[in-house]
Length: 352
Ligand code: UT7
Image (cartoon, rainbow, N blue to C red; front, side):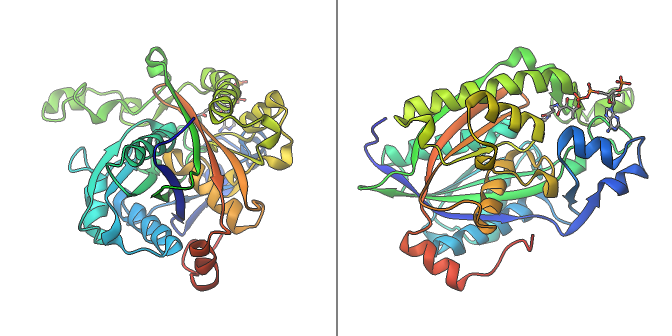
């Protein structure tokens, strides 16, 4: 794919809450076990917010990414926040972030594509850059599912964690790091994963209707098995299509950075694609499924723990509620001057 103006990735940052919930902690809440959770999902612990909100966690990730990029918040032209657990229905979480970080010259909006949101947001950011509309775009994925979980439902409460992660993209006449994107949706699967009571379908103003809601309707509802079956097919399909669009061969993909929903889904997708397990980047054991934050947070951990050696071609791939799915083939090149400066000076960010 040819781009009139390329989009360089000049920053990456993350923020996760400090409170840890282990599988042993969950054993005290629901009929589950560390053995079941770890073997069926790969998750051992997750981070849960205490006082933070989507916008506060997103703002910390944004500051981390801006530090990485070595740019001032006033240079940002657009903030896109991918989230399905915003602070409010409105104003947007992106506007809250804009004020919190002092991005005084930027436009700001939220985008909702559940766990695929960050892929959608990268695609949107790239389009604005490619057309010359905006030069510097901050793209954030943030979700706080802990606020919407039924802590007595073992089908869902063991899966999710809270987190935020961000990219800074900048226009370039000579280089391009977003090699391709591929976005899909299938609304006929909408019933498989949802938080039913937060929108106009159940108007909160109507107190009687609110009262009549079933308990389960107030929380995340999920039918996990069909999503699993959808994901093991959707992930390889998205990666294959995106690499074809990028004009790269499968062998040229250095790392697969999948949505961190289940280690079995990641491994199965890698196997179907013929990608070696050591090329799969995963932090699900530490953070669980952080939804829109999951892919950049995994990339961030992979860079920080030096699994990812640059320059690298990374296949980012997501799936989730909607149903939505999609992939982005990116070039990760931390040898860039600004990123090297960051590595030597900048120490801020999650400790794990
Ligand atoms: O971002 C996208 C979000 N969602 C997903 O990606 C979910 C995708 N789906 C999955 O990851 C898996 O389907 C799950 C991890 C949710 C479930 O794993 P599974 O291998 O599909 O298990 P299952 O639903 O087929 O359940 C197997 C058994 C059932 O018991 P019976 O009927 O065999 O007696 C469940 O009741 O495991 C039971 N079970 C549990 N046992 C202990 C379900 N949850 C738990 C639990 N602890 N937490």
